[in-house]
Image (cartoon, rainbow, N blue to C red; front, side, top):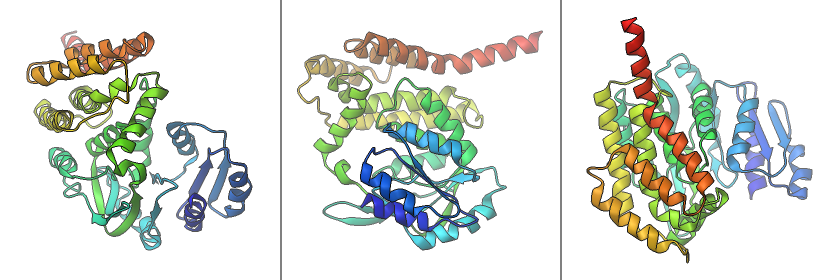
Length: 344
């Protein structure tokens, strides 16, 4: 099935649309088959097995277009939407307020299909864009949208510098996309997303835990997933400079909305620890954070998260603390240096 999806994508290549395929499967039969799909404006790259983030970053280095569209090989797109895309991108290409393009998405599970779309992400008001993104009750499919390449390069450069890439970081990536600009709308079906293992609670959380294990963390960290997502996103909204600067009041509105949404997920969604010996410590910390969320600062959140991570890996906890401590304090340091320069 993956090969059939790749063959379809290769068929889209034309002088206005470049297709890049990087096979990191290590499968000998795929390595023999895929190069046969190569054609003009379509490049097939056979690579050694690697993680998804590395695979995408390597593809991004080769991309020439002003916009890039990340596709998963278990999903597929509508041919007419792809054929229309160069014309859409030509119209918006010079409008730097536009970060990407969205459309209608088909979401598939074993039980049901649905047609979904994000509302008001074309708004000039960043708070409106993010509020509607957070109000959408479904899988994060904004991740699968054509995005201005310079925005993708900046954001994935930042994400690659993180201590680890977790499964929820697609949420952080889309938050940063929306902070960088609005989305033009294509009024037609664009992408088909098959939820696969993400449609059931246990199999979805097994996938979440696989990311944590790859980072050297115990499955008990899974209980904090949405708290950590809330902390990281809100800290970036308040302090980061990887998107256009917004007034502090606007930053605060967006940060509060982001954290409150993720905190409600943390409070209301049961998380599994899969037999972890640290399940009790995770439950105690969760109870503590639930009781103190209204009063806790970013610095205190970071200390609690890092202290818990240190139970499994002191080295990772140190790197995590140092990275996010620098993010929390970066804006304060920048403002201090600006003030000193003005005084001098």
